[in-house]
Amino acid sequence: MPDADLPHAAFLRPLLDVMAERLGGAVILHAAPSGRILMVAGEVPGLEIHDPIGARPDNYADRFQVFAQDGSLARVEDLPVVRAMASGEAITDEVWLLSGAAGPVPVFVDSYPLKDDSGAVIGVIAAATDPKRWSNRAERLKHTISIRDGFARG
Image (cartoon, rainbow, N blue to C red; front, side, top):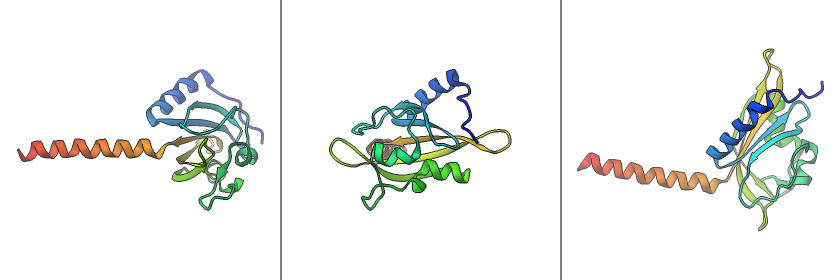
């Protein structure tokens, strides 16, 4: 089965841009069943990902240097986007290592399958975010809660 055409591109581009801005990372639209990258919005600071449009899962590991947790190059079938396409289920909250200027950079990766009316997977939206950004948000949230608790006591 060939990849679906890029439907609603004019609608998707600003949506991916907003998602990337809110997440503080990169949002990638993949075609199914090939996994080819159709659109990218945002970025993860420190990563060395150049010209991703058109890349396919079988060259992600070599082209983008995706590493497994043990430091080896990732196997294609283990990549979250490939697993989301195959299973039709979201793959969330995984940490992967991607090539960066100063060595591998950890990123949170979530992959969400997009399905047509029949339930067939026609694409995947993947998000990669910098764990430091989430750590900073958690610290700000803890601070805000402590201020709120101080007002509640006083």
